[in-house]
Image 1 (cartoon, rainbow, N blue to C red):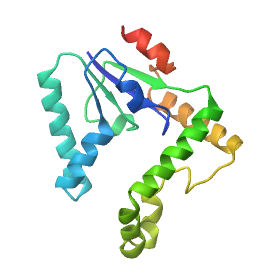
Image 2 (cartoon, rainbow, N blue to C red):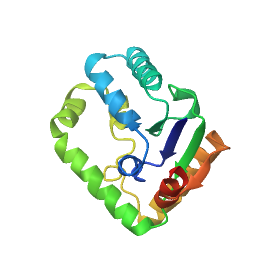
Image 3 (cartoon, rainbow, N blue to C red):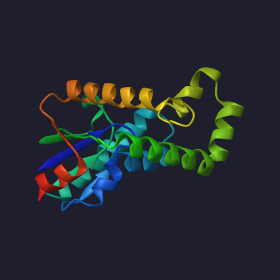
Image 4 (cartoon, helix red, strand yellow):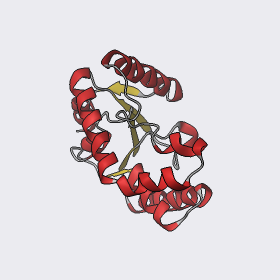
Length: 171
């Protein structure tokens, strides 16, 4: 069985993956590895598709997590779960902390973006960073709910569950 777990940025997909009883992979990691090898989106996507195909051939049951939409998934899942969080205040604080760490840990990369990339590409490098795109708590909550509705529309048959519910479902 091939399962895809998606959810909004910072919702806990990667953390959840570590708790599941089935072998799983984060699509972000596969994309990051391929960006190091290839420098064009077309070849990166082909590399990810190749990596995913190898994993599917090797394992009977697999879980992938990510934020890719239906048209950008390098596989066709048998089941889709949308991970949601209901603890918005903790979620907001954790997302800000995580995004601040990303900025600090990748300072050199972001300096290179500012120094060399065209202005119109700047936002592409910070699109999901809540520190850069600082919102009020209410705006954050509204944004998460809007993004979750978009995921429901993208995957209409998906189950919308919390992390605990997904773990229970897969046991």
